[in-house]
Length: 84
Length: 290
Image 1 (cartoon, helix red, strand yellow):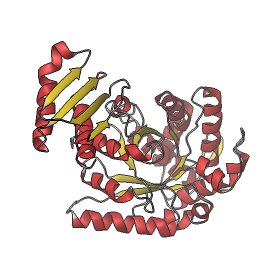
Image 2 (tube, chains in turn blue, purple):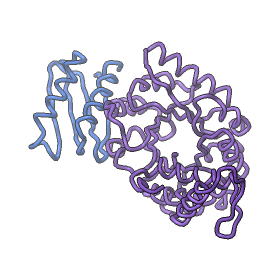
Image 3 (cartoon, helix red, strand yellow):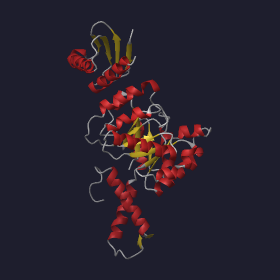
Image 4 (cartoon, helix red, strand yellow):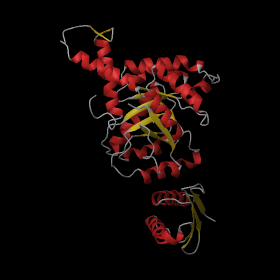
């Protein structure tokens, strides 16, 4: 099964894990999910749309990452996934 | 003048996101030794995401790229487009590799219509690099040399000592060359982050040999380095008084006495240089009078 990861579980970072699937599914774990779930979902959907990925499961484990870091990790994970 | 320079591993969000908070004269985003091969892509993506703004920053932003002979060099060049990146630190170079690197950077910038003039800081960390120091220093757009002690001692198959005797010649030569060509001579980072006494001792030695700044790998080291390379208040006051005294007399007079000592044009110029460096480095503290 095709899959890729980027990021880490260090403070201020985020681990993004993408796995091949039949449909799009996004799971987010974050200490600030109650406040930023909508923003994070928007960033993730936008990244998947940019790279035309819709049949994947995306798991995001956030350790307090800011939006620029989430965008960077998504970009890396998606590139690694498409080249896997 | 770059007196304190902080290395930041480019794949560490906790430091990358805070780079403007650190009080160093320059931050060096590192794509080379602090990033393992399989994370080079992630480091580039992280920098690209964080360095999008072209607003001026408090300190200089420097990018340490991978050597031209590495498989990562070409991908690193993709970051040249970032507005804040105008200075590149080039590892493991001698004159031949430096010229190849500068040529490759210019070719890439021209091809991608990147309209910027880049400056370069070669890292002297091989025996051949030591021999080529002068040639590198006089290469156009080279604005500093950095001593890379760990790789150098490894290249020479020797060990580092507490008193740094094995680096005495290299530091002295670097300081001499840098002053001759009016560029910065930056000392190697002190790697024992829990030994402040050692940091202070090594920084003072570098300063006393004529080095103009020192790199570090931990933000806690910035303050000590800045203080050691910054003139004392007594030195500033004396320079100010010398300049005022010299400028108050007939410029045709070659020498004069000041506090019982002979002052000539060389001492006057040195005092002026010190004051001008202070104005440049800490404009906020020295806006008036000097």
